[in-house]
Image (cartoon, one colour):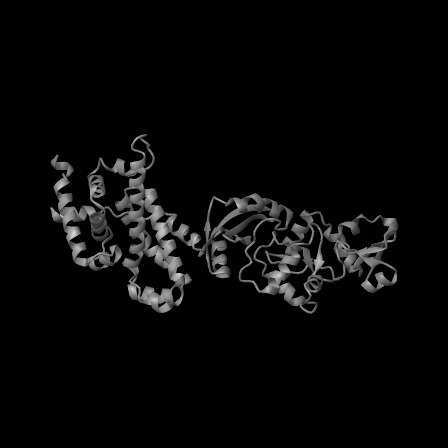
Length: 258
Length: 186
């Protein structure tokens, strides 16, 4: 009878429900949740935690994404169907707009310099591009052009922080953190930028355009710069050329760092 | 818990909490869940308790120095947290039940539907009888016979002398035997 009783009691042991382990790790910050979302690059994986969105990635499949997330962040990525309100209300808009807006982003683990690069990059308007050198000057590190490139290559949240809008000063697109440089072109074209025209102009040595009605010069992709009519449009190869022609820099696109 | 030797896991926890904690969670979650389920009789409450106990454990460990973590008896320590959470739940249920005596509030005050469904089976009968045992006896029987902990670990977990735990387990078994009529004998 005792044996029977204790055997029956031991048989009352049950397995923990499947989600328990993941729920604990997410609750203590040792795992992030992730979902998939559509973008101009196709499906992307978006991971998030208490602090905000921690990763955006394209990957062949969920397994590869999870492995890369673990190796990049040292935490597990756990698939979920539920996105917390403070993320879901801004996520699709941030992906569509190509800027965080009010979406919280987790940039933990980045250096102050890397974070400064990403914060400045986040302000480049949709459909416009700036050079690595421009970012370096804007964050008061004019000599750190290569480091800017490296910081952008390690952008944890591409698409949302639009590192695809930062190109080489000679007008070629340069590397992209999310797959190939072709993805950079796809994103810029989806934003309405005529990449071929921009590259052709840059290849002719044109770095700035100005309007003789306002005597203001802009970066070629600046929204105001693109509105200049053919009759009033002037092209400049250098800041010096523009200034000696009596033009001042645009206060919106800041074609030369203040 | 069977596959990890207690000393090496606490040594590794002390060395790298974040890298080792997921392993602890994997090893102990079925223990905690099973025990809580049989103490509370409700799967949702058991899941809540197991999760909360592990979250509290992680937060506590984050504040401990390496020496203190290395010296921990991990399983009884985790059960100190989990058993307290179980007891608190039972108390708050009892309070709710007292408050709702007049208006017959059908809110979740006891065994969930899965336990009620189990009652028609042999094992379910035993699960129900466990819930009739008073708290310290029920906890001791569940930890010893369902979770499989030795008396000295249960003594730490329930903060009671080992001799008391041993006699609680024996008294609990005696009561179960007295009340338990195996199906085939009915």
